[in-house]
Length: 572
Image 1 (cartoon, rainbow, N blue to C red):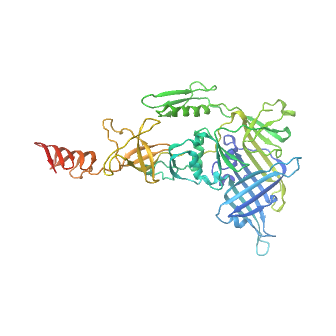
Image 2 (image 1 turned 60 degrees about the horizontal axis):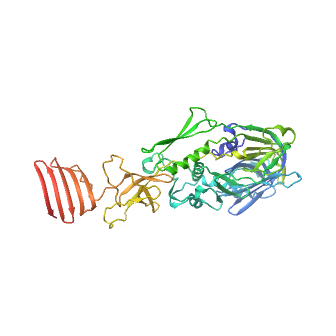
Image 3 (image 1 turned 180 degrees about the vertical axis):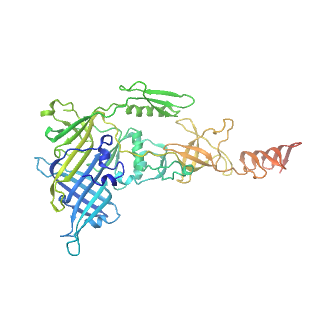
């Protein structure tokens, strides 16, 4: 039975999308097992429990980052009121708790598989009976789609924020809410950055010049992309119902044993192996370089070039460390189909080995340790009739239980598909200087002690924050040295850790000339009464060049016009 799951969930929110190898359809064999399923729904503090026998279909996909799922159930209204309807028939946030466990005693307590998430979509169908008086609604068929909290909520979160002298951990903590808890062990997130710009505002694609490229990336996309870039792991702890940001996956204390009679099918899968070498190309004018990152299985002549423009050697070293990890060979994977509900409760991240008993003694995967990274569990009631097992705790289901696992020592980064963030974003700023009095047009350059480069201090009114922006030569020609003075309005292009000045937005005081007659004007100096100007304009359609120096009332003038050379010193 293919549910409307495939049409209602946006990519990659379907269990099939999360589990399939290269998006190929999965048609797994099914077995019959007796299961106890419990479901509770909570809206605004009100909770309703749905008996397991009412549940006719469950389809969940669990991966390292979280989970997505679908569930369908009947509620009869003939004998009692439908308590689910008031929860579904409104737009308030609905929380879900789902547990599944075997109903048959297997000589040991098996912890139920437990999922706590947020309902993202709802659907119901009412059964009307036309042959009964008043044509009452005697039953309703509910369908719910749900996911883990971070995916459900942060996919709708598009903050545009600027942080100064902060860490990525502080930025993430600010986005947390009661449904999302995060534990950190990755060192990169505790590094203080001079500036972090979270540019996730929803911008229009036809206003690129005003605010930057169109952005469709949410905070969830940003987080996955960032962790991908720092060789991190985004892991959902299913037992603690919290998230973990890790620099490396933890070493297990022990490995659970899979017995042969639990397995219906085991496939060994070798994912596509990278065959290229990486060339890191640093495109700076002085010190341009190409660093080759090699690997054992590279095919001659295949390269993936990564272009950078980085004058600071220490920053390039971090880049090399990251891309070296991308060339690691990860070995084979196991794709397991179980013939019953397993004797252990498995989640993504659980470590197991297949015990050598019977037919699997000579298998290449026997006694090897593997870490699960994905589960797909599908159950369909053997008798889908709504009246069968209604309001009971247990019923029989056609079960499909799939596990994907990788070698314990070769665990790679794994993320759901994400939309890359489109930097830069454009905002306006004002140049600051503490030199001189408020009216003086002074500039101030600050030396960065780490990079030895000089920087402006710029105030960003949108966030009322001050950031440092690299002092760079003008784009037109190297002949001019005109630092931007205080009060100058500038347009900034901002990416995650850096801002650059794109252009100046205002004229200086007294610089702009009348449009008629036309002319050009350059102003040097700190104040209107302490400056030198060079002006070229037209008077009576004849060109005039003048250079005027002024200090308070004292002025000197050199002026060239048709038939005249004027040299003048005076007090005005």
